[in-house]
Every structure is written in C-alpha cells, then in structure tokens.
Amino acid sequence: MSTAGTQRDLPQVLGPADAGYDDARAIWNAMFDRRPREIWRCRDAADVAAAIDRARAQDLVIGVRCGGHSMAGHSVPADGLMIDLTPMGDVRVDPQRRRAWVQGGALLRALDVASQAHGLATTAGNVSHTGVGGLTLGGGMGWLARQRGLACDNVVSFEVVTAEGQSVRASTDENPDLYWGLRGGGGNFGVVTEFEFELHRTGTRAVSVELDFPVPGAAPAVAAWRDLAATAPRAATYAALVTGGVVTLGFVWVGEPDAGREHARALAALGRPSAERLVELSYLELQSRDDTTRGHTFRSYVKGHYLDELSDAAIEAFLAHDSKVGASLQAYGGAIADVPDDATAFSHRATAFEYVAATRWSDPAEDEGRKALVREGAARVGVLASGVYVNTLSDDGLNGVQRAYPPAKLARLRALKDHWDPDNIFHLNPNIPPSRAPSPTT
Ligand code: FAD
Image (cartoon, rainbow, N blue to C red; front, side, top):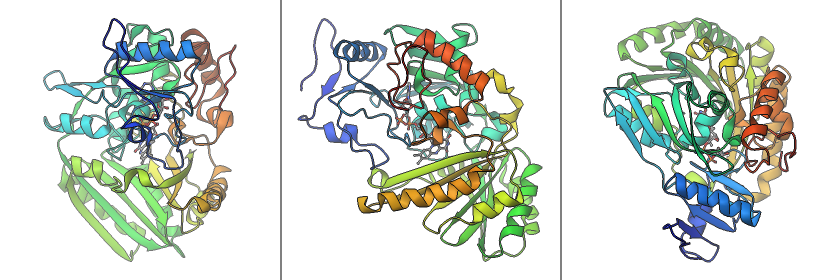
C-alpha cells in the first residue's frame, strides 16, 4: 500500500505487502500474531482523526498501539485498522515548571531519560519498553507511586482525539468528566495524543535489597516481610518474587542511598537468607533493570489480583506456585491511598499488595499447559482477593472489568462511554460497554 494522499499529506499507511508491515504489527506478547488490514503510522492529532474517519467509513475494527505491551494484545486488530502511535514518541520537559509533555506513543524510557536529565521524575512502570499510553490510562504503578501517586495521578492534562475525530483537552478545568475517566478507565474514551505530567525532584539514586529463601519453610520470612511493609517509609516499595523454588523478599528504595541502606537493617527480622544482594544504582538503571533483551520473541500469559491484606492463607497460596511460574507481590499504600477512591476511575486504592503471576515460553505446543499453570496458581490467591488492576487483565472479559471497578464506578464509566463513544469504536481494551452497543470482544 502507499502513502495515502488527499489535500493534506496523510500518514504512511502500511498494508500486508509493504516493507515494515511485520515489524509494525509485532508486539511484546508473541502469542498475538494478528494481521491488520491497514496500519496508520500517525504523527499528530490530525493523522489520528484521519485514521478514525477511515476506520468508521470502512467499518474496520480499531486498535490503538503505543508500547504494544497489552497483556491481551489489544493494540493489533485482526483485519482491522491499527492506529500506530509509535512515530509520536517525543517528550519535552520544562525543568522550571516541573512539567513533561509526552506524546501519545512514547515509551517510559523516553519519559524517564528526559526527566532525569534535570534530576526530575514522575511515576512510571518498572520496565522501560512499556508504553506511557496504556500504562498511564490504566493507572500506572511504579517504584515512585508510594511517594508520588500512580502515573495517572500525575497527569495534569490530556489531549484527546475523540470517537468523532474532534481534538479536546481534558483537565480539572476542561471536560473534567473525561479527565476523571482517563485516569484509570483505559483506552475507552479516545486516543490520547499528548499527556502533560507533573514532575518531582526525586534525585537520581536508588537502592535495591533482595533476600533469597528456599520456598520450603519460607512462610515465616514472608510474614515478617509483610509486617515490615505495613509501616515502611514511602521511599521503600516492598516487592517479592517466587519462582523456581526460591522466594526473593526485599524492597526498592528511591532516594538517598544511605537511608535505604539503613532501612535494609530491618530485614534482619526475616531470618537468615540463602543469599542476599544490596545494590545501589541510578534511577535510570533501576527503571530498565527488568527489561527483556529478547523482547518480543516470548509467548506470555498473566493473571493478577489485588489483596487488601496478605493473610497467612494468602502467603501459603503465594508460595505454592509451580516452579515454571513467576509470582510477584508489590506493595501499594502511601500516596496511592492518599487520593480518595472516587477522585479517579482507577479503583481499589486501599489495596495492600498487587499480585501478578506470569510465565513465558517459546514453543506454541506449550500454550495450554503454561496457561493452566498460571490459572491454577492465581485461582488459589484469587479466592482471597479484593479486585484486580485493569492493566493486568488478559482473557478475563467483562468479569475482569467488573472486578477492576466497583459497581458505582462502572456505572459512571458507562455513562461516560455513552457520551464519548456510544458506538464503542474503541472496544479493543478492557471494555466498558456503552448502553446501546454491547461489547463485541469482552
Ligand atoms: P499497548 O498494547 O500499546 O496499549 C494497550 C492499550 O492501551 C491499547 O489497546 C489502547 O486501548 C490503550 N492505549 C495505549 N496508548 C493509548 C493512547 N495514547 N491513547 C488511547 N489509548 C491508548 N503496569 C504497571 O502499572 N506497572 C508496571 O511496572 C508494569 N510493567 C509491565 C511490564 C511488562 C513487561 C508488561 C508486558 C506490562 C507491564 N505493565 C505494567 C502493564 C502495562 O501497564 C499494560 O500492559 C499497558 O496496557 C501497556 O501499555 P502499552 O502502551 O505498552 O501497550
């Protein structure tokens, strides 16, 4: 296919026969090998509006792609039109005003690098090749969240192209209902072409502390870790991972390293580990520490839950995962819980820990077996859960959306959907079905 051209110089449009088509449709989870009919490589809001117009005219399903890390592969529509925001990856920082203007297709790495050049940062996720778009619209949990709130809590304004192709701004002053919904409601209400973030003087240093314990007999250590997490300073985010018969317990500290080292002494309460690591690193090193060099070659499956408390029964369930599964816990609290629950679409702010179980593999023959292992482990934790983070939903359908938002919020989100996207053209996402167009995919 060629460059589409009318009066305006329209964006490059890729079809299946074009060079670059396969790269443009490849996403983080290799399970999703979908072939859009057209990939519109958008450079600005006008391109996005033209792509929406085209999809509506041709009755093509729309997928919106930023970092391509959706657990469900939502950004690539089979035989539909993919709005590819990756050409819009720039970040502009004003260090005096402590603001960052982030284009809708930017990756976390771009935001962190531009901000840290001035000793500034805002909350972003733990893997630098994740997209700012999907992460922020679903909430955005990261190592700064207990100090500064979720990524969505730090958005001052959004520039949005609506289902009607109009450009609107959403902030406390303009379209405040939309502003409320975009902070946790996912990609349901339009295509965000720019995020304006508040930045903070975070410094550039971090500390990571990890203690390993063999799983048999580890429950008392996990219980002691849980008790410390409840009173930890906001600079510390307690995190745990169980995989391959070992549980790793510790925390990440963002701020003055000496204070982080001092706090690490508290972990003596966990007992004697089989191995321990205390690493001082830059904030940028921390933010890319969990990046995957083999990137988009793995197949992957994920289940998540929110836990209001980590009971002894939950600890037992956490430690019981198959060794091929990696199950993690990350502490919430602090500034996340300072925000009233009804202030944003994002929900479950009283969560104590976010739980995620995941596995990665290469051979398609393992698909069903691997998924079953994750489902079994997550089901044992799930009976004790209070909800779920919308950004960890995969094949959970409407039931997952109902666990992500309490009924009153879901009703408000549906009213918003009725207003901003009554035909549900943005439905490749954890979908809020509008009244008149039930969701075709959830
Ligand atoms: P995409 O697949 O590009 O987008 C996902 C969906 O978001 C799209 O289908 C669309 O509906 C919507 N969307 C994206 N951009 C826009 C936009 N500009 N306008 C409108 N809609 C848009 N989450 C955390 O909170 N913290 C973490 O530390 C974290 N780490 C992760 C690490 C990995 C390896 C992975 C795979 C996921 C992680 N997540 C994390 C979850 C992540 O936030 C979600 O998967 C998120 O949807 C990814 O966003 P994306 O832009 O990369 O994905």
